[in-house]
Length: 336
Image (cartoon, rainbow, N blue to C red; front, top):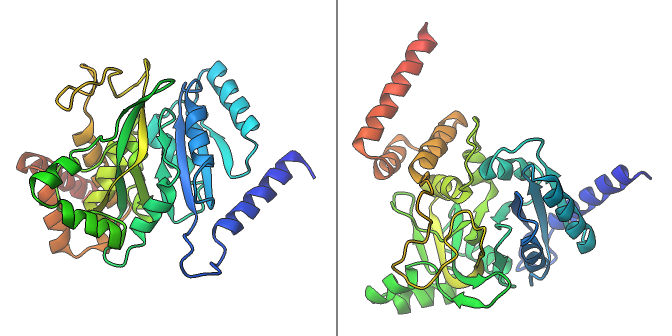
């Protein structure tokens, strides 16, 4: 048997293991984890190790190398070879497409109904997969994605904090701490935010676990090119399926000198986390996700009044007017 045939055989075997019928009804399903890598071979080993050390072993981890420099790609290959775990596989892009599109290339290799994402400079707590899957499989509410709180640590150093989001602070201020704690104990999640809840509700990419169908609903059909996959996927999935928040620290953001989206200095809840000059593409990403939703015929899955409520929540009048102009122009082109 050739190396290629052996690899294909192992891939089929792993997919069968992940999706095999559960011998007991309380077994958790498999989960796909995507790590998008571009010139981060100096920190990715910690991320890979944190996946391998999960207390839930039914996972596959797709590492997608987004056309890294030769030295980084070679080092990544060496790290994964040393890992020697058939649950991990490497996918390589033929050009640099940006984090969001790279994640969607990896999604084509995923075999599970649930998909988590991990930045190469972050790590999971050992119970990340099991806790997030339990949140999704609660007995109360179906949601497109779940998110957890995160801590921060210095790569190569010590832990810096045990909080990332405003959730615990806001919960205490609103006298909701006991209710949220009871929800977490009973249902696996602390709070549900329906699709018409505006604002940023998540931490970072490594705090997210999606239903795969939600990601497919907003699969981009045009080139995006930007790196903030959380801005695209979290906002897009939430708009149409809502978010579950798990008020537990289940992932850790790694700070180091070459962070793309986070200043390496960390000392205050009130400081600017992003370096000045870093473009905020949240609004653009939300519009791109909405565009993909319509191109993928997502509107056929919603009653018009529910869809109208969602769109009116997330976009201001000026943006909606611009969208109407675009749709009108497309209608003219179709008639001609």
